[in-house]
Length: 109
Image 1 (tube, rainbow, N blue to C red):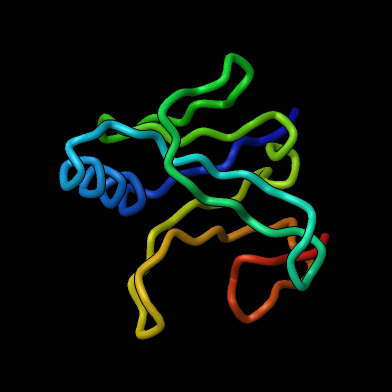
Image 2 (cartoon, rainbow, N blue to C red):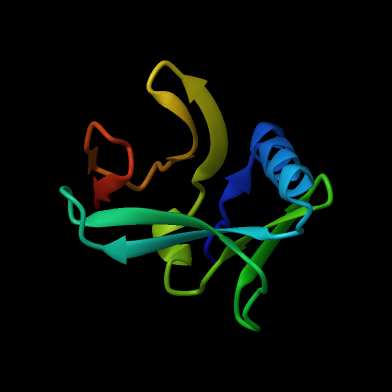
């Protein structure tokens, strides 16, 4: 059985702030795609609707969506939000990644 990713309270809170600022109620979609400098890359976007086969993670009145193809790559990962000197962004702490690039959006397994 695949352990689903976890979403931190900080990530749900930031998504709530984004939705409050825009007046919309979008979900955060986290996907894994081929490409990037390490072989795979994260695609993090706002989405209006969950697909019927999406994993839906809910917290703080917000939703994070993961499609079934991306789910094995995100097993037991942590979806977080961080504010650093290089900027504020959603980040993935992935125990399955064997290497990642400096930008934090690309990884290999």
